[in-house]
Each structure stands twice: as C-alpha cells, then as structure tokens.
Length: 199
Image 1 (cartoon, rainbow, N blue to C red):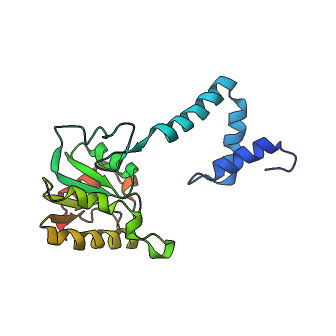
Image 2 (image 1 turned 30 degrees about the horizontal axis):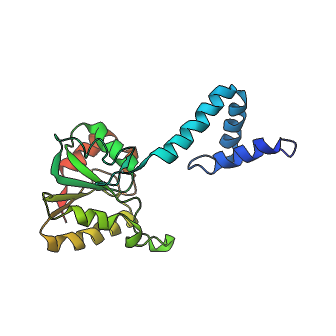
C-alpha cells in the first residue's frame, strides 16, 4: 500500500494477502472495502471468523470439519459406512457431495505426503483412517488429486491397507492429470467415481 496509508489499513491488507489466491492488490481492495462497512458489519465479519476458528473442530470419525463430535455425513444413518472415500481436504468433500451420486462416507487426510515440503505420513490423518478399517469398511476409494504428491499418498495408503483385506480403489482418470478435485465439474467427478480401479 502507499506510504501515506494509515498503519491499521496496511496491517489489514497484509492479513488479507496471507489468504490463498489473494494478491496484494486484491488485499488492498478488501481492506478499503472493510473501511466502507458499518461498524456492525465489520464486527459481524470479525465475529464470524473467530466463531469459525473456535467452534469448529475435527469430526471424531472422518476428520472433516464439524461443530459436533460427528459431522452430518458420519451422523447420517442412510450413508453406506462400508465405503470410505479418502480426500486431501474438507473442500474436496463438498465437490463430491455436489454430484449427488456418492452415498458412502469420507476420510480427510488434511494434506498429502510431500518430502520436499517436509510433510511426512505421520503428519496426516492416516492413523485415524487405519482405526476405522477392519470393522464394517470393505472398500477405500483413494480420491487424492492426480498429482505426484496425490499419487504418492494414494500408493502409500494402499500398501498399508492391502494386507488388511480391504479393497482399495483409485478414482479413474476422468480427472485430468495435475487437476484439483475441488475444481472438477460434477459430471467429471461422477465418471471418475464410476470408473475407479482397484490399486
């Protein structure tokens, strides 16, 4: 921002710029927009951020974001608990749910194995996935992104699960290589689910 901008405005823009996909110009526009808001609107925005951060935790079963012990999907008795779709992040669940076709449950890893970035398997929610397998779970669908990290993570988990007698499948490559699950359209995701292959 300009040197003559008030310091609180500069600090606000710098905070917005920390968000993914927000460059400094957009961050500045957001900071200026906040200044046009009424004090009530600004407090509502601040309260919404604080409430989300303090009231949302991980679902005890699938590790999705939830305000209760179980997320609405794990708490839904109509879902097929024998099928678990493993995804990288909670936003990927939203993408699959938009298809309206998948009736199983999910498991969120909260990242992918990436030695270059210092992310090791023990930093992901893999232990929690293993704790779920062995009971009613008969199939695990690896739905990580078709990137180097996504493939490495899928292969690592498949190697651990195979000896446990669980069928491990991978999304079919109706998804373009290098694409991200959250940006795929419903038809592509549905075809990828339908054409998944055993690993």
